[in-house]
Length: 115
Image (tube, rainbow, N blue to C red; front, side, top):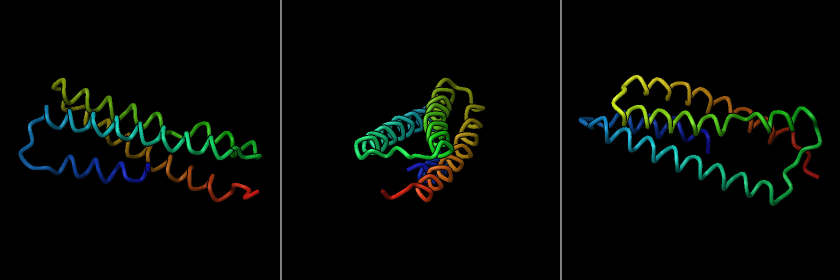
């Protein structure tokens, strides 16, 4: 889920002759869909009892940057919609945070005890 964000952001930014207000709305919609997707995935994880026994795994699970990524995307969309083109720089940070979150989630999946 997190690894899809950079691809979709790139597609939105590469659309030619797009007014900035339309780009801002598209980025906000992307942020909302991304946040809802993460909530749905997180809800399914809690139902299956996805708690790990390792303290380090719990710490990484708590600090995975899913929420930060969603907030950055929403803030970037709101900034572009308000007319501040510099808000697009927040997408760079959001993509970097998304990659870090994806690696952390993958690592948690690999170290989790199957019992």
